[in-house]
Length: 164
Image: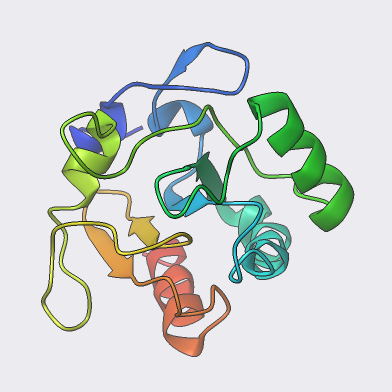
């Protein structure tokens, strides 16, 4: 789909298969580190709304469960998938658990963390539900955890990227 090195970094899906962002078949991808037992877990609802609203236009959300923040994603991948499906009706891909910070961080997150947020700050993922919008050419827009997925600036960024 693209020549972006970021979009070709391998990760492991929930079934143990190696995938890349390009394999997802979407032009615009929102990468989110998710957790089932976090105060921000209700963001799954807004993420699913974005998936339903823009999915047929070349957009997808992709979730990466992470247990690095106060152990708020302790379950197995199977338990996480069941929770996402039954509680929030999640239809977007949720992958194998990853580390987003530290020396054992997933390669995809090592690359994503180089992108600055709106305040110009790059580096460590601060908490669960940090959102990285990966554009077709590989550019990344970073939105911090407390910024809701349906915030006007995020929706506008998705719409702009999909009309390019």
